Image (tube, rainbow, N blue to C red; front, side, top):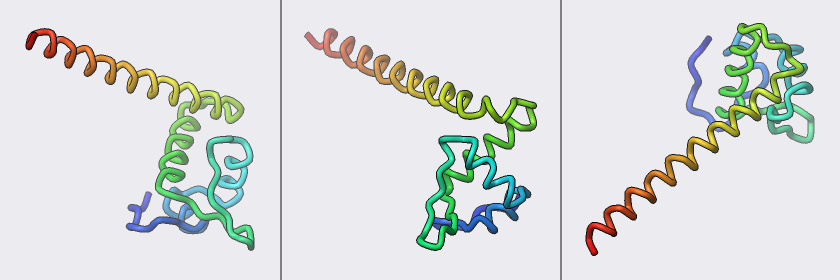
Length: 106
């Protein structure tokens, strides 16, 4: 896999070459995974962000793990839920620590 250049958007050809995925594979994954929505212009050319490429890398991992394509969107949603739960836990932990500090000041 090639390294990412410092750009805002990457063409489908650049992403294909970077990740070693064919253009039809990228288009198919886009049709199957609701979270993968590259930007398009009036000519319907696709442009991928760094986040899109990171998502594609996660999809490649799921494929390596033999997870069926039909389950990819559900798996990604579950990951997002876990990430949100972890963020909430960390925020609550910080609030608790601050409350303990305030109580100790009183």
